[in-house]
Image 1 (cartoon, rainbow, N blue to C red):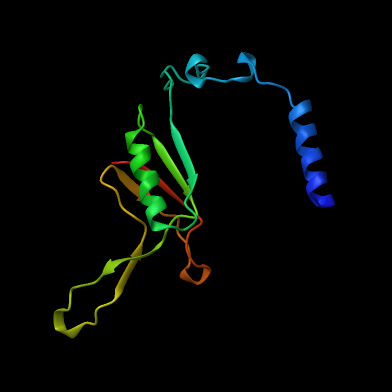
Image 2: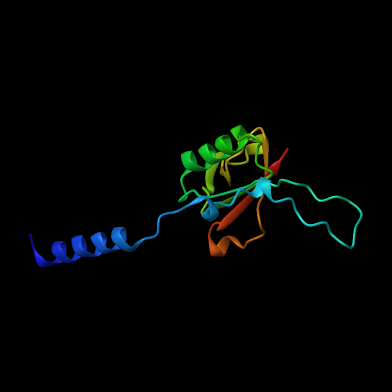
Length: 136
């Protein structure tokens, strides 16, 4: 073995040796801790609010998978935040009335359960970095 491999093996061994083992006190279950009431309002706060956040690495298939997974959660997600979402060609304009040219339509993936909220951005800056989805 070379010296770099030996160094790595030693570092890994030390990390495993000196890392604490997790116990029950290290785990946090949000549903077991009810929210504090808002003193300004008599309206009760929701006890559970599920946010699903994931990086899609600008892949169309990954963005679709995230939307489908978030729909299948029990309870379903209340909000989806997708970092680096796919934002590109999603179709073509087929309305060729009066000889208008066909052109590509750009946007983000759609899903039957979700409505996309796209922040305003100038096209010169490229695609949005984050897209938020809310339930339909």
